[in-house]
Image (cartoon, rainbow, N blue to C red; front, side, top):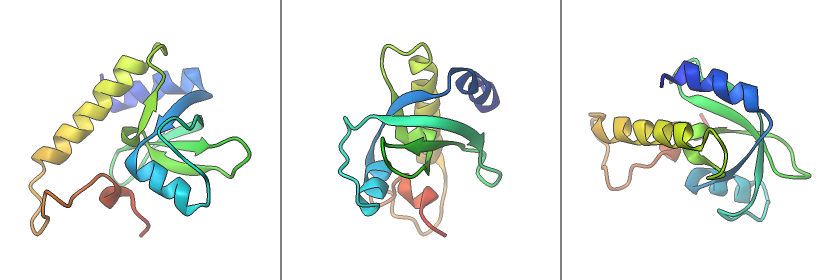
Length: 119
């Protein structure tokens, strides 16, 4: 499934409940939120980043301000009908990053957050 097709499918199901990992949890903690992998998030919007082509979601935690997070750093409930499609997308992004030939990058220290950090 193409990223554009997945984007269209996700828009049909908004708002969605999801969970964050790594970079999303770090961002939430930097915002002063208590966050774990089990903290439910609400996805209220979705768009494609014009530079990277990555699918980016507008995310919030109950009672907090919205922030943006890459779909590759979010996980849907396993019971959601889009779970498998989003998981496949996340796997494709991870594989693309693993194959990427980036000079001067130590692959052991490289992580997804390097792509989505503050500029």
